[in-house]
Length: 344
Image 1 (cartoon, rainbow, N blue to C red):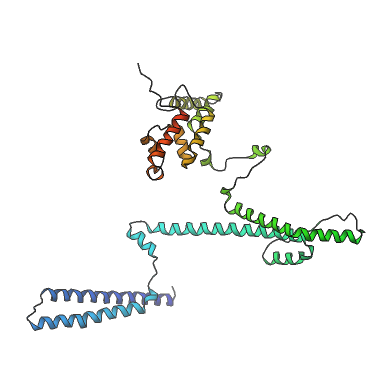
Image 2 (image 1 turned 90 degrees about the vertical axis):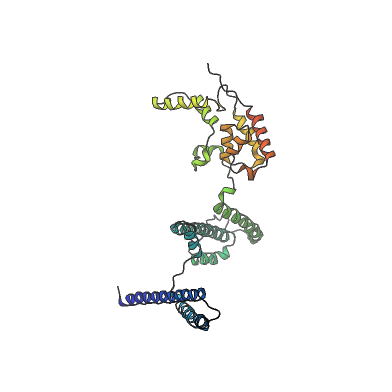
């Protein structure tokens, strides 16, 4: 450790000791004033003189010294964020504040990087179209792209079928190219808006693919592929038993569970693939989540207490009338309650 660091640490420790002494003096003066006030004698002159002297001189000087010292050494005090103090006062771990701050910075960096990449790709695409539509601006476009760290526009490869064409044909082609400049820029502007929107918020758009590409599609998020009990029951019922014995045992126990009261899939099963579709259409106006719809299919709640256990924060999201409407939709689509089988 260098001598400068040692001197800095020594000065800081000395300052903290002086500040502690000054605060201790203020507390001692206030304690003395409290004692004099408790034993104050209005008729005796000495008690009044001592009280006035303690307040006007001793305490005033101590407070002034502490204030001047704190103002002179304000820059040496560590800066603690107010949020961190609130975490400590609330009994929370201060490390959570650091972790949340790092996650927030990381998320902001990812968003900024995505925007930078999107603008960089749009810059290259725009440069290619400008160089192709207006060859006289190709040099300027290349200079701008190189100055901003991008790639140069692709070279124009065009077969000249008739090099000795007449001047009228050349002028007509040039005029046609100038007329298409505005339409080209309009298309680029619309493309840029869609491109940036797809890059930044892809979840708001649905991309349609051809039927031939369905075989290449795969599940990107397992949470989005949650199945209801009916879909699992339908798959296991139609599947031929060709698995190992332990898998057959699991399947048999699962089918037994699904056929047990009060499960809605007990025999005879009244569900069909159209049942789920009709239920989704009937529940669409109530803005339920995917997990809540799956739980409704699995449990078939036909009373408000059961429905409130399925729908999160139902009291604040739905009115009692809407709850009755949801129960009516469930009963009309999925049928009424089934009675438990009578045991012999």
